Length: 276
Image (cartoon, helix red, strand yellow):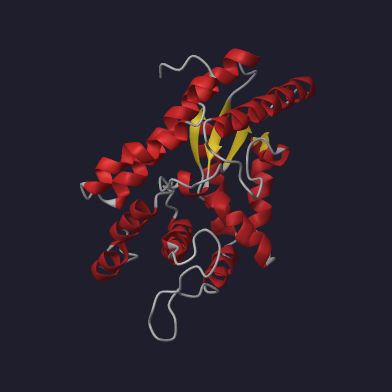
């Protein structure tokens, strides 16, 4: 909060590992650790957006900066990259719409670049607000979701799943609530997406060998290591698919599972087996 410019936050993300040493040594549970990481990241984002607005001026209309993927689920880890987007309100006047697009294109570019300076590396898949495709008005985002939901292309469906775990991090959260309501309405109208998401998830192979041993990385800097995040993906996918089916808007996996339990979608035993 005391940072006066982006240089005061340069490489700041690396300090997070030092901050987490004590909680990890004291046996803090993973949910606490991931929420701490997410809170830390959002505090940096708040300051960076403040810097951005100071540099390019006040926004011309309502908007929301969106985070997706693991950070959108409050499950961010120390090696998470940027997964973000920007939604701004629909404007009927063409000149106003063009002005807004120009502003938010500059806004997104500067914000993502400053996040990189702070230590959050760019997304390898370019799923960031600085990509013009992911900096669009609300009506365009609704078209994106409609096309993903009604697609029969397995690769497109797999690619779009990261966008189903989105939440607003800064700005007018009513825009994300509007998009979430639209998403759930589309799923009800086109439930085939649930089957397609399930088929994609069924392609996962447990990282266990024929002899019941964990399969670890065979080469690279992580040789001999076990990818826990990848191993947990089936549970994340399960919670996402059933939450879409049941109209649950929250994104955190543990919260999704609890909501599914309270809706009696999961039995007590199933719920406890999953969270343990």
